[in-house]
Length: 171
Image (tube, rainbow, N blue to C red; front, side, top):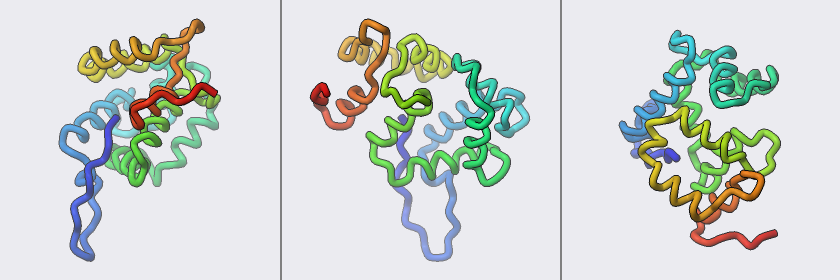
């Protein structure tokens, strides 16, 4: 997951620049994600782009209200700068566990705490470049945290181990 870099101290009166929150490589990753989501290539993410992105991830029955709520989080049309600013605001002050959990929760609208492995794989495939880079780590993850018999990955336990280094007690 992408974590914001520590902000440099600015002199009083200096404007905030969202691009200074992230390393150049992180900005490039966000740009690639933005380009994938901007399905119609008009430089803005709108309702149709979000619906198409969800469809590409396998979620075809997304409610219009859900999309509207996502768009309401933006102060206006979502161009790349707004997109990056929104991520910066979401990540600012979040601890690593919260950040990672929030990323998974995007794909778990019913808050079950699990994702189907096949759905998880489809998400990763959309971001093929990242998937190839992290493939050895993904294989290790599934070896350490195999899906249950129904094919679900317990991502809450996975995130706890990533951030705390030990398995949660089974509840």
